[in-house]
Image (cartoon, rainbow, N blue to C red; front, side, top):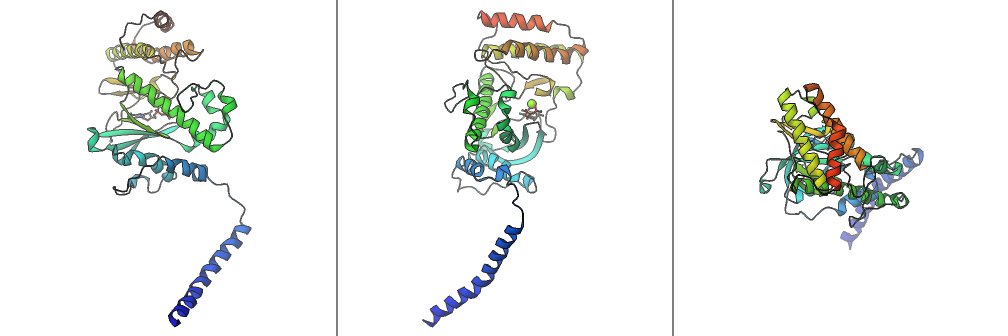
Length: 323
Ligand SMILES: Nc1ncnc2c1ncn2[C@@H]1O[C@H](COP(=O)(O)OP(=O)(O)OP(=O)(O)O)[C@@H](O)[C@H]1O
Ligand SMILES: [Mg+2]
């Protein structure tokens, strides 16, 4: 009995300072103006990220030191953790590059993948936030529902709910992954896509961790290399068409150059010629931008005529590449 009472008393003693702290905190909250909660810390966003996680209790926690002090550490780790849990990566060791919409990290591939390094493209929270401004439409993205069907009246469906927005972005990231997969399987010069979960894409890494492959706009070629590269790009553009795809944002900024080989990246804005009316202009622009890059090296061609000829072949089913 005494023992019990003492416990009760102890409890009260312990609780008093705690209550004081709680009260002080409550008073403080009343005085402090309410700060806007960060988007990625919002409950729905965190719940959405957690829902995608698997039970990986058999593994040590995923804590790459790279992000220890990173402003968006929680967001990045929640995005990459799934790949760790699926035994696809074992560590994250560097940042390959930060683009406008996403950051690409260099990961150590899990030995079971048979690869050395993998590139993880993680879309930023900003990307998810900007959806209310119809960013997807401005960027020419194809809207898909959860079954992969094209949504034509996406504007009406673009509800204000965070959850719906998150799913929407996740759908087009998945579309980016599926396009890259289709092109890779057809033999195009694109990184091998490995997996996509939520806001992150995993693919083969071009270059080395110390020296990620430079983009074409960062290298100098000789005339012969430039000619070879232009032909390689035209072959790829034709192969893309044979797979019912147009890159839509092809330029020296989305082509990596490593050991004499070009690799096309970033299929976020790819379009299916059967689904969009603006495709011909996009095809023409893709070829023109590549041509403008190689022209100073002495390559001569008529990009508009090349686009026209490829388009005619596409429409008449007489493309020369085999898929
Ligand atoms: N597989 C890869 N291997 C090595 N580096 C890569 C790979 N994929 C992308 N990168 C690097 O990450 C950068 C950003 O990738 P990507 O172009 O796909 O994203 P983005 O956000 O659309 O970028 P941007 O807005 O600059 O076009 C690339 O310019 C490239 O330097
Ligand atoms: Mg890019």
